Length: 116
Image 1 (cartoon, rainbow, N blue to C red):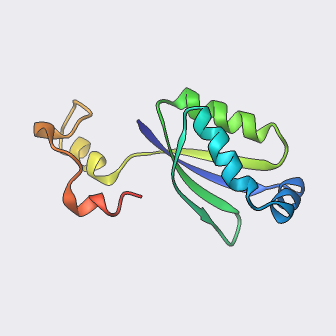
Image 2: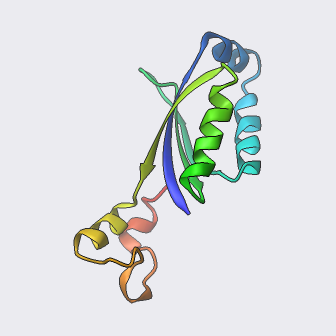
């Protein structure tokens, strides 16, 4: 599964919805799960964006569908980034061409708690 960072900004309509029904956030997460993308972590933010969500999805097409579906509703503007866990990035920089951790290793212990 791929990891994606979704930065979301609520529109005026979206802010009104969340103000009236904060539980809507959880309902949206469940709806997105049914589309094939799972929430790994989610944060409310102060500043330019209202939410940062770390999601897992099988491919770019799935996360693009999620982004388009929810963006088209007019309640949120979403910017999505593909993300690579740092241990995978290091493996690739060290020359691994398989896209998997060498020697069948799992997530290194020092990263396990920091992943999500």
